[in-house]
Image (cartoon, rainbow, N blue to C red; front, side, top):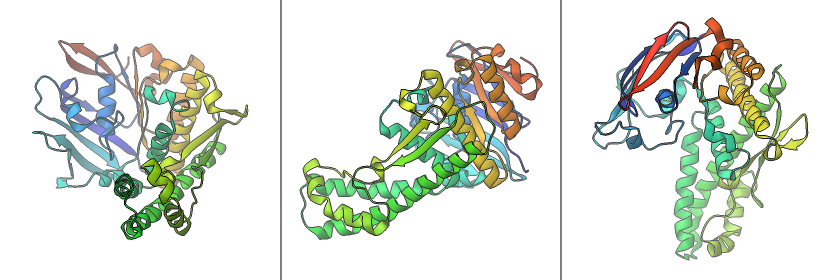
Length: 369
């Protein structure tokens, strides 16, 4: 199996890091230090090696180190499929994020063709009890790991929907203004639904095929009321629903209203009704299933970013998590407040201590914690 790993990482004026250089050998990376030292900022930098806005979903200008405000840069060497890639992504002078792969300017979607990056962050702990938007975002990020073009299809759908919503708010009644937009929405919407269904099926299969210490979730894609799946039916539904949509001033049906349903399989209890610990374990289970499915399909495990994951697990679950990561062969970047949280990893990992001095993060790599 050809490996996927970040071999080196350089940060310049990224968040709290004025400058940092780290070298990795493909093993999991345990990053520890006090709260506020800049541990998560390292994970966020790695997440910028994938398409999108990163694990915090922050605007590019928000990642600029203050007070200098000079812009930021993340440079990495990444091994993927037996090839070494040089990746540089940066922001300067108030411009949008730029990307260069192997010395050539490239669109962000190209990152998804080199590597798959999955993450779990504390803000996701509320996934099962927050609104459907958060679960759609989680599902679409999972879907993107299987279908690198999924983000472009979603953008196409959302752009056409915004234009349709503008017509609805302006009370435009001429059908000709809607027809082309609804065709675009129906075409993209059918692909979005098919992609999401495929991702859910992959997760279900990967969960069932594994012996794991983490619970299995029964998953289902929940469509909004009156939303058909096929392209032709979806286009007709948009046309039939114009009057109701006009009264609401927005599009009321479609994949933008879908939800991800999850049930703790062993107990038959909806994830929203599970305990905090069970909800966390279900999330970890899905991330691991996503990783296993990708490893099977692509013959290489994804890079995992697990922020403060150890703090929510007892020693037994921590050991089980580390064993699963090791069995998967994934390079996982994990954060925690102290080295004791990674004791079960022993020499299976590299270690980075992060401290803070006068508002600047300092990274120190160690063979042992």
